[in-house]
Image (cartoon, rainbow, N blue to C red; front, side, top):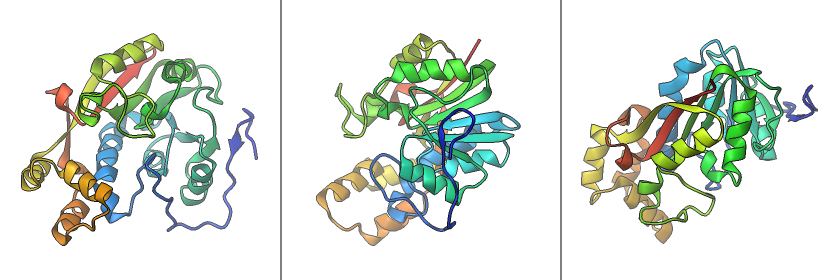
Length: 263
């Protein structure tokens, strides 16, 4: 079916509340023990910025599995979820009925000018080919004073020493200066910039696994080697609260988190 904008809206059918989407490398999925570190690293940003969505009309642009859009819907006035992937859109319509799931190209948002209060875009911008066009679209649909909440891997730490991303699903990764420039070029003003860091417990795990819990997971996955029981348990026990958002040492952060406003 379509809504008044002409965009495709997924119609719920045969609800399966326990289903999950397959891992593709383009999104993180909750409920998978081996994926738990990455899921919690995404989840903390939703949790930290959730209050900014309360009682607002919110667009989650590039919702992936949809758990974040569902989380926002518990306090927001309305949540519209946009994603280009048809499977993801149908999944969200079935599993998270509080979200209006729409299949859409993020370079042309199917929304009226000055129509929404908040756009959420977490771990998505690095997948887009025309990043500045997406930011311009956010500026178009946001009301004056509205906010874009955006997160993305920090290029400096995610693909160290490289201009091209290590992740084959990423088109362009950004550092703080590049993200600021992108948001400004797209017509928004950067209000705050913070970074996601490991908290004390994750730093202890880094020390335990030869300096990097991340590298330990990736090395074993790339080698096709089963995880030792202790590593599997440690990863499964990670919580969102094991991560910290702070403006300190931002160049060393794992992910960048910005709040940008429309004047």
